[in-house]
Amino acid sequence: MNYDALKLKNQLCFPLYACSKEVVRKYHPHLEKIGLTYTQYIVMMVLWEKQELTVKELGDELYLDSGTLTPLLKKMEAQGLLLRTRSSVDERSVIVSLTEKGYHLRDQAVDIPGKIGSCIPLSAEEANTLYRLLYKVLGQS
Image 1 (spheres, rainbow, N blue to C red):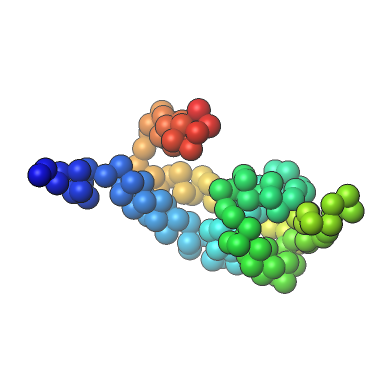
Image 2 (image 1 turned 30 degrees about the horizontal axis):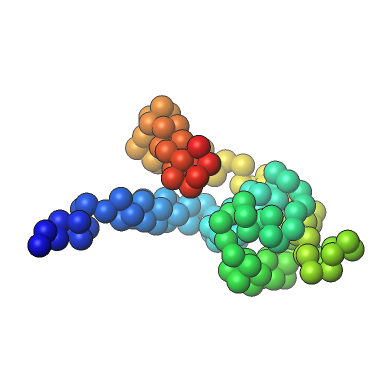
């Protein structure tokens, strides 16, 4: 029986996993300065772009389920970064919106993507290719 398929070096999932961890690790010192975890940061990026959306829509954007998102959003609300309110149309739906404090945090975060980009050893063309391929894997080609 050939077990080559079980070798770590033959797995696409492993370099994706390891790279993801490494990139998130590079974010840590920058995000620590503004009081966010990486997951909180990606929530804020969506809110800075869209201002307001439901928990379901936010979960869809971030590939996170409500079991992961709900405690995270509660903590962020306690930090004063966002508000969670029940929809007046459908009380099962919770709307997430930025507070003024959350909105202004973006001024402190605006340089982070450039700082991260400068420490990733890819050319702009390579980064663009990787970006397209990763979204293809996610089914968004």
